[in-house]
Image (cartoon, rainbow, N blue to C red; front, side, top):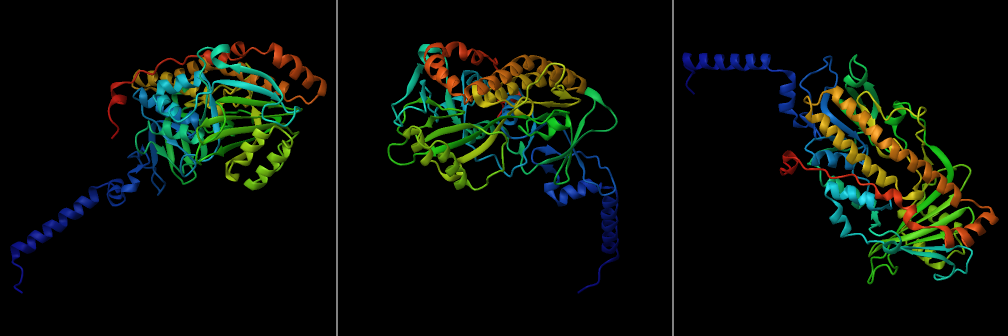
Length: 478
């Protein structure tokens, strides 16, 4: 092989020198992003070019972070998206919650889903409930025996819309309105702190995750459920156990013909216990049992044991209820304590602190006696998203604007959620009484003669209003 010419040797030296200079002047962040693309983005969260040095994990800077991919969290993200505002959702699970049973949504909840744009696809999968049948457990154990009262929603509450919706289907519908990567799974929050030295509405919030990531956001929305660590950090007490437990299940009828029940809510009342079931779809039926217990007791993890305990509780009750329970797969049965938190004025902490705000069960957990837990979470989402979107558009999303938006959201929502939480708790206390004389009065006088469905459902007339899509939201997702 011929030796290299002097000119080629000089060219090689210049090339090596150029490479060395490029390496010396290129930031370690740029090189690491080039070598490891997964470091460039985490889910839908852009990584800040700043580094803390000393080998520490880089901070990710975002505008709005939502903690929790449940009903409140996904509805808030979807509402913001419809208004042209992006948000990152942190979900501690590896995927959307696939389990659970169903949620009963009244017309106020459907108005929210209409505003978000997912109502019609859910209506197509879930039955519209036509009425309600109330029965006594002390009557002969037959499907037709012991009817105390029957209601037609169209006659007693014209315009009412009631459907039981599978939780999984609701979460998937809401998530479908978000761009790819908007939900960061396996992202559990370990610590919450005010970023830097600035306190109050002008300060950003730092979240440290279990995997070591650190996220700094102007707005953090705590939608992390009943046992919310975000609410704890803000000074809220633990939710109060109300003395009742609930079994819930979702029966499956996948064979020919599907489930055999008419589209009515069935309530059955006993002493210190009540149960019921409602068709969800042509192949699914949701059921529940509420029973008194001084304390929640030990957690049972064996699904078969849970189902046996539930069946034992209602032995001798109407056969159609028992049949629905028997047709439920073991892993579709859950048992939970019923809890709430009354937001007493002057005693409860504010719903916002600095750049952090609560929504849904994280702020106002309530018992299911009015069927308003999920509906109120959906209402929160639309009201909060509208306030935050307005703040994001004003002054370029200054932190002080966000702070005022959060306070306005609390003022608007507190007068709604506090009375509903209290009313749900009081209704539960009344219907769970075990005194024989009280139960006799309930079955013989109150339900047959005094209950009026229209006034009882007055709270479902709440209208969240429209979410007008912006030009950015109307554009196709990348």
